[in-house]
Amino acid sequence: MRFFICLGVGITLVTSQASAGVEAPRFSFNMAADGVAGGGAAADFGSVQQVSQTEWLFSGSYGSTSGSMLSWTYLVDPDPFVTGTFTVTNETSVSREYVIDFVLPIEPALTASLISGQVAGTLTDANGSGSALLTSMGGGFAFSALADGSVVQGLMANASHQISVANGTSSFTGGSFGFPTPIAGPAINMTIGIRFAFSLSAGDSVSFSSVFVANPVPGPTSLLVAAIFGGMRQRRRY
Amino acid sequence: MRSVIPNQYTLACGSTAAILLAMPCSAAFVIGGTSIGVSSSAGTGTVSNTLAQVSTTSWAATGSWSTPSASVSWTNNTFGWNNSTQSGFANGNIVVRNNTSAAQDFSVVINMGGTAGGPLSVSGSLGGQFVNGSTLLGSLTSNGPLWEARADNGVVRSELNNALFFAQPFQVISIGNFGFSNPLYGGSVTNSMSLRFSMRLSAGAEASFTSTVAFQAVPTPGAAALVCLAGVFGQRRRRR
Image (cartoon, rainbow over all chains, first blue to last red; front, side):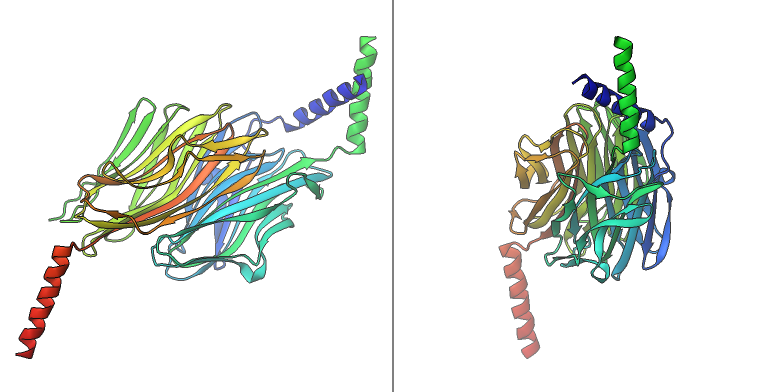
């Protein structure tokens, strides 16, 4: 019993040491509308606020030259997770294809991970035209979870949501993976991210709320370190 | 007669903060300005807001209210009163986040000052998401309606009465769709149309809502009869 208590203390210490930090991570975004891309560090387009020892809240907005307005509120933790909401409005008179990425540098790197994610959204006939349409691009995923820039899980394949009422809204559940039990993910060295790829009708808006969490899997080395740490504590007591 | 008052006023009173923005005015269907107000048990917030005119009859507001531990943001909340079409609308998205370690109450009022001759037909909708960003069970609740569309102080439509949503740690919930197109508001608007959100969010939770409301003047029976009579007289004159 003492061994497991010490093991737990050891793991906690290892984890807390790894997650300590005071500078805001360089959480960034990129929005491509019909292939015209723009973006940068989220903090440069709004505000960033530390809300706990390891958590940061980013809020901001970005108006592209191609007639799209993007805004976001994201809580991130480099340990890592990304959760929050963004809204994009297609202010043009034609349908647009969007690819929107949010990327978070992580610390420490994960030699193995357990991941989970979810997404939901709301489509709005923002211009009161009587219709709005959201589809995933080319039948692919409207939502993808990224690890080091590669897609590790996708949701909302072949998504299609439509509104046929003026000023109407349509909320949808985009599904989940690894919920409630996280699933095995890859090693993650540099970043996690979320990608939204969809086509949005003219004059309309959509908001997506999502969660992507990657937890470290205690590897043999970590367990060994924790066990040694625990053993040393026991010996000191005696 | 059109008047433009470009000044922007920021008010902060106790835990309530509001922005008043003066708007151009026109006759009959007159917009008198707009305000976005936030009050919260999480404390007094700092408000920032940008207002942009997106057409001759509509404007868009983007801004936020924030404290060190809570925030409300709104983006592209567009609204307009069109005198030539005798109609008006408001739509937009708000995101409410509670970063404190306890449940907090939030009240958000998006107010469009103005007058409009009634009766009015009103349509609109509401949708949203709830995200529990904490490691504990999260909740989104309301004591009474979570969302209301109001004309002056009268409720035109309310949704999510005594709302009660629970979410597991790091769970995203779709709040659902609520739409309406039938309410007829019999009176004239003499002061304002408004959208109101009232909710309690658990620690670490976030709720986002997209809502729309549109109103259109409906000819009274007397006015409709006059239009019909004018048409009939017009036809008779042409025949002669």
